[in-house]
Length: 183
Ligand code: ATP
Ligand code: MG
Image (cartoon, protein in one colour):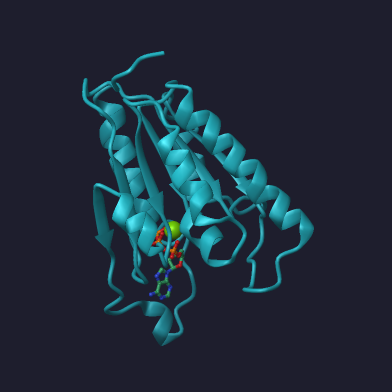
């Protein structure tokens, strides 16, 4: 197992959180930048997936970019607070196990755990489990965790934290999610 990432340095922990738009796309942008330097990038998307007729644009684009792989772990529907099913919980458990493998194997230089903060907010994972994933990561692997409501313990543990503030969003004027921009 390689001890250092493609950058030749120890991998750090980044968190992109807040209520504004731009967290997942910032993580993907960083992944593309890393790919340009020959990094092996893997993104695990929690709470996403499903509709093959209306996939996220990033899934379609990344299929054309060898070296930047993605797995959607689901559940493939919106989970309201307090309404998670047993299937939803299983999807998150499977995701955490995949995250453990991806982070500890040394196979990737950058691992993105997209929306994992939302799984924490919904009570579908515990912050201690996520901290344990970080403790067990290969030294050279950089990790980005995204999603609203990052818990204090994660913010304290991270090396880089960006808070995306919602100042305006067209949704407030009744403009629905747009393909190419929002998904
Ligand atoms: P993106 O995937 O575009 O980078 P994000 O990861 O920061 O957005 P999420 O909190 O994961 O945002 O929410 C995903 C969806 O919700 C996107 O379609 C996004 O445009 C939309 N969204 C994000 N912030 C807001 C907001 N403040 N008001 C309304 N919709 C929002
Ligand atoms: Mg997001």
